[in-house]
Image (cartoon, rainbow, N blue to C red):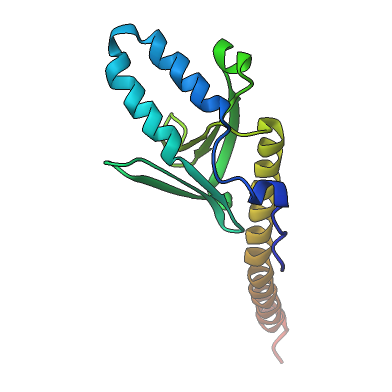
Length: 166
């Protein structure tokens, strides 16, 4: 079974939009006294944030001192949410929060600064369904063959047991 290729406009995404940096500046200004601490964190987060979409899943990494890297396979995605507050909507942003079946109440990955959040959500839903369909089809074909073989052998045993003895 062949894996569908990733559209070029999604494959080309490596960095968040520039308006995410504007949002981070506004967020740091709104923090008042915490500005000297929050702004450097958000500045480096924005400038080190990288995305990569491939046939396996989504790769996201950021950070300088404490480097974080997250790989999320499409088959593990359980739910996708689009969230945006008033300021995010004003600068044209939305967070795409992706949850897995890890048992955590929070999102496992939040994609920020995407060009077309609705289109990205639709792409992720299609990959999520496609990955599940491929694994389900691969799992049922060998399983169906084994179950069919077991059923035929049980049928043979039943006919032997039920045959009248002479």
